Length: 430
Image 1: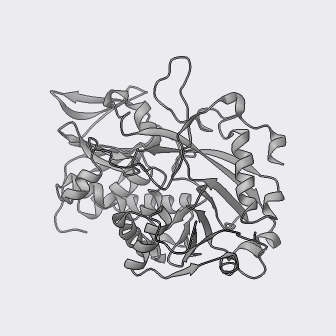
Image 2 (image 1 turned 30 degrees about the vertical axis):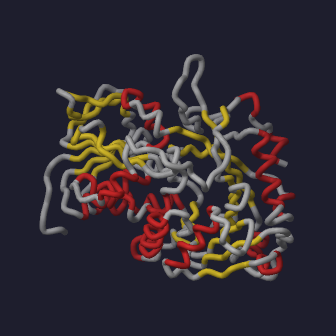
């Protein structure tokens, strides 16, 4: 245990990536009174973005900070004592439009950062080279007019398992979790946050409150007025169930991530022989009728019957892009889908900041679809902010009031409004 202890009460709202990692790092620093509240009755929450079959673990970023920070996270993921077999270093095949890496695209800048940081990468200049990144028995597409590179220092993590293991570590350090607590109000006195109130009228007070409620943050706390920097978007995911023999063919494949055009990505089969496909794009917003003005997650929890469905057009897009990587798999039916909800920021940078000059309230969210890989280390940034140790440049990078200098170049398009009439029917998965 740390030699210096802190007995002030810290309350964290949200038991996802930001919240649990923050709790862990505070406890590691000697904080003895850390409580995490979550709306779900079970943890990890079934519909949390950080509770999923898998998440890409990559250092390939066009931003030097994220590239270096990801390599630090990957080093932690390799600690089997902490994470068991949560992390799988399959490699990540990053697709681009050329092999020269001189055009200034997201792939180009990511390659340069990977090289500068000493990553083990292999340039793939054409279709034949691309196919060499896969085991010889795997039937792949021709990868015509395509190039990229294979980053051996990365892969994927079993997201639900990794989060569960960190929850257990928080508990072992003395952290407390209180479930079935939907926070509906932030309590303030004289401009200072003093606690929160839940839907069942219970209240929790603390010296410091960290709001880490992910994509639910803008709609759960409209009084914070986070619309300029936070937007809940649903991302389309589909799964294919393989037999054990089918999965054996693809099990040693890398993660494939297309930053060259579509944002499509596909994982190798997981332990249950499931292949997951998705598109890293602008996603869908959902405004509850009749007068909703804040995009709100629509999940299996809020709609048990249709909460997992995605638009029919997205099903077709996923199959089209899958055919360009694994044509045989593209002919198989999808076994399920999900709208995975992110809390997006315009520039893709996270939000880790004190709120409106209130030293008692910290906002830690805005994962923008790329925070999970940092689960082992992201809470350190929040703890640094809490202790006024966060680097000045990072404070500006993650500020609630920062100037948005450029869009998130890893994703294309604009969010589309989810129309429930456009959701697929069972026949569309075949």
